[in-house]
Image (cartoon, rainbow, N blue to C red; front, side):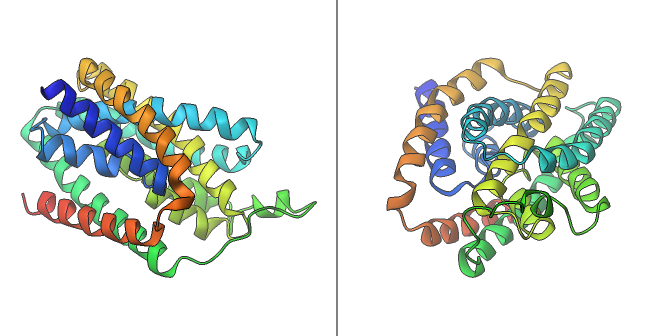
Length: 263
């Protein structure tokens, strides 16, 4: 019975990600902790690989449509992957199941969820309409950040957050991209966010696996639900009131974040 519940949870998260683009980590990790009683370190490690495999398929599809701005992906990855490796080294020293590591993960996860809730609500209420495509010759200007160091700094912050909590590559990542690359059209921002999350979550997830922080049977059940959910959600995207869904999600994420911070 619980196996079916995991598959249904995976389907629900996949559906919401397909509908709204909100990162699966901000939803799946609290669900595993609060509703299924999974230990925080196992929930984070399993969810990282869940995100990596799920977003890998999306990246292949977006790359075929030539929507991925690889220069932007490279700039963010140059900051996020080294930060992820350093965070994994710190977790190795602490021991992922230790009380201090568990407290660090739950507190950081709570803060990350509150940041994601704020970013999601802002996009729902104040998000501006971005161009859908680039004019000829604008590619280089659109993929140039406000300052060369900013993608490295924000990439490092996101890399640390994602490795500790599995949250941050979705709504927070999109918000950062909107600020750093204001000329980039929305489809390319979403594509960049999905594409750079793949190497980051894969590196972080395999690092957690080496620490024994991944539940492999649980991962397979979640993927069995999420892949059809994402497929369905992406096809229903244009028929749903995105602003309402994002507003409700922000409330849910704020509740989960507050609960984790106060634990």
